[in-house]
Image (cartoon, rainbow, N blue to C red; front, side, top):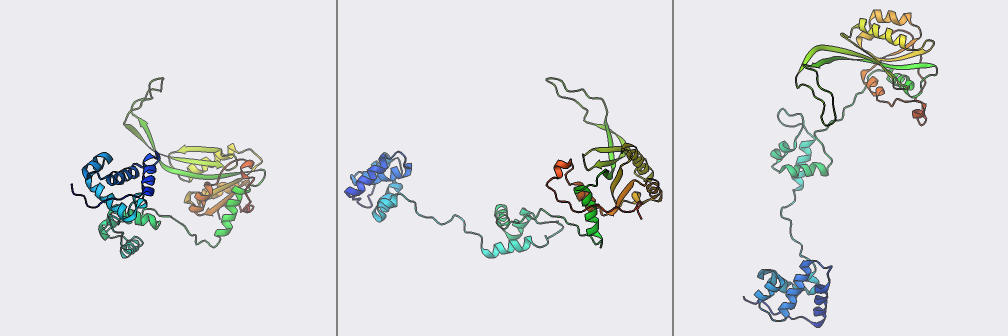
Length: 321
């Protein structure tokens, strides 16, 4: 094959190339390049150089030229290459960001990666990289609730004060109900679990209507008193209050936290409040605040040692008012 140039190696370069070949920690590509130059300096034909170095003839020509231009240092580093695909223009990135922060087209609730890629003419992965670089997550929504109650701050202090700094010699109960619970049963009884065999149950089930769960959570020790009833009217609620009244030790005040559900403000429920003076109800709270307060950790005094009291609960009047 044609020899493009004559490789001349100085004594210093020959020593450096020999050291590269003998170095077992060198990358294989560096060793092959050094061998190409030394074999070429010995006036071997191109095809023999390629066979001994286990490379192609174009590779021999390439590294002969590289050595002639940059010397030994040129063999130890690769040339920088342009990217295979040009970066996304700044105007296109700005368009993606503007569309993402706006309303989606059609009847979609939010932008998806494929919808955005189709709208701007980019690939799905490119859109995902742009979103990731700018910390955009169109599929996520953070909800909030702002109360328009002028006494909202006082109610927050009242309710959270019960959780964070409960009064002495009293029981604090968070009362709520869960309606429309499906009562389901399997069509045939299943077999229990045994060694080497898992438990069994039928794939189909029978419906037995719905039930309502009334529950009272003791915020001090986490105990729950619950009752399941067919409906959730004021009659069932009064029956549940009677059950709680019997379960709470005599002589203790009962602070009950309730939401503003209509059943809790029924006239007969108000009458029940009046007949039980030891019950102190904290009512007229928004459902949102009630749900947030239920997420506070429940436990003994050791769980509250590091907590600062929000405020002592205000003793509101018996009844809903």
